[in-house]
Amino acid sequence: MYAIVTGASSGIGKAIALMLAKEGYSIATLSRDTGRLEKLRSELHQVGTHRDHLLLKGNLLNIEDLNIFYQTLHVQKGTPDIIINNAGVYTEGLPSTLDENLIQEQFAINFMAAFRITQPWIAQMKARKSGTIVSIGSVVSKQPRTTAAAYSLSKQMLDNWMHLLADELRESDIRVCRIHPGSVNTNSWNDEPDEIRAAILDPNELAGAVKLAISLPADTWLEELVIRPLKKDI
Image 1: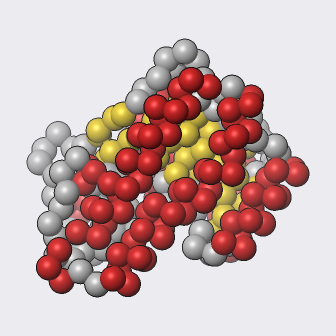
Image 2: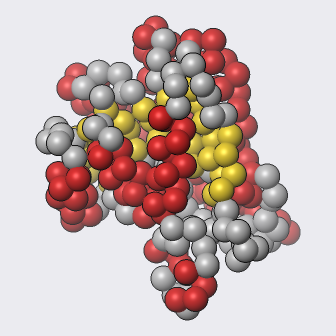
């Protein structure tokens, strides 16, 4: 069994990758940071029994890198059992001051990267009649954030695409799950006080949500999950 996890070299993605390794999956990912990839490799070896993780250097925004990633996986590992579309970037900006370049940047990483990672595998998953595709979205898909307009739009596009996929692929026994977290304690919160960071979600809680989605019986589908701190989001 193997899983593709984007953004696996840090934060939420790393927590999910380590959880999956503990559950017996080998991990495939790509990152621009070789140092982070090697650190991830070491941590994966510590928690799981697999030694055939495929961690490639590459950029999710580079189509050539994505093609190499796909072809390498296709030859060495075949069709993935799980795809986790986690990679994303958060930026702020009001609707009235949106810049077209910012919109394109947000759509490229928050939507198009997930689309390009997933789309080549869909026909193979349908032919096999199994697989799970998970997106780590955001609560802004439900409640757009005025101060993060481009981010909200890009996450809504991801959510809508996953929703459409879910309706189509359930007929092929493929589960498509959308997870919408509130604020998560990742590197983007490094400059915030400890009391604020302690009050928001931990990446391992997102990994737990993914574990729930994949551990349900094969004929059970966790379609959508909103997970957020009990106290009001920051």
